[in-house]
Amino acid sequence: MPSLHPILSAEKDATLPAPGMRCCGGIVGYILQPGDPGYEKGIVKGLVIAEKAMDPETFQGYNWNDLSNSLDVRNQFRVAGASATAIGTGASNTRQLLETYPASQRPRSAGVLASAYRGGNYTDWFLPSLYELMAIMENRALIDQLDSAKKGYWTSSEWDRWFAWYISSGSGLPALHYKCEEGNLILPVRMFTYPEQNLAQIKELPHHPVVDPETADLEIGDAFGGGVVLYILQPGDKGYVEGEKHGIIIATEDINTGHKRYNSSRTDLYPMLERGTPKKETGATASAIGWSAWNTDRILKVYPSSSHPHTAAAVARGYRGGGFTDWSIPTHAEMSIVRERTKNLKKYKTLVNKLGYDCCRSHWTSTQGTYLNNKKRQRVRPVRYF
Image (tube, rainbow, N blue to C red):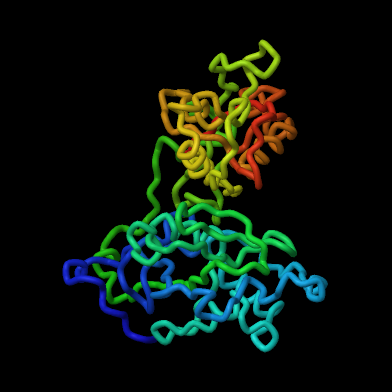
């Protein structure tokens, strides 16, 4: 194993790796958090990014699949099978890309170039998945090369045979990009674990599970935290911590601000945007469990409550059930849980009784598609985490 690179400054020498520091062959981009696949309490793990991203001008005009848009190659476009988006899936995505687009046939594909990078003499570099790169971009203000870049970055997560995800360097938000188009950068990453000998101060901390007596006995359907317990986090969910109980609370009512439905006097249905509001990309594309607050924050950044008080995000975040201020719109996966459980009366009767039998048949999720729609009329049922 190669030795660690020097950390950026003497002032940081006594600290553990953090975003922006040089370590393990590159620059630390993200430190795994509770709930991330591979997270271990007391062990510092994370994602290191290459010292410099690969530019298509330098690497002779590569793109995601090393194919052009000409008619004679369109029949070669196919799903590569690299559809995973979660943290911890970039390496497996890249392996799948190399099987579909091997270096001998597609030497300028994004997966081939990322895996061929040898920063720090490491050989395990890969093209990051969507959520891996999203997590890294959250720290871009601490990393000079990311904060100053003017182009987007490819991810290894594809959408279909024609499109793959990329991240805008300016906004840090995800969007779809045609696989055969040029212009996006390639940012190789690798997973690292900080050496055991440098973890003495952390290993002195207790490793027994932290049991919160307030949440230890909670079950689905229990009243708690301003609403009712909808779901208990499982291994792999964002925010999951082994030995601790965390989960999702859902409001027991649809919120009502008096904003009228179009051409109607009803006040329980809400548009995602007010009529006449220009549609903008918000980057609220996360669909997994645990990402509702992340999505809602991004919607509010583009459409703040002060100027757009009647959007779904604004009324959800403005909800004050139980006196809490951290309510959000559920993600697609979280709302799917609601729908599945409200249909299963035999197993979740307590939950359904508290939510209402007609709950969540036509409600907004926070997961944005390709475009926002300001004409649909859906309800809002906020959630929060405990």
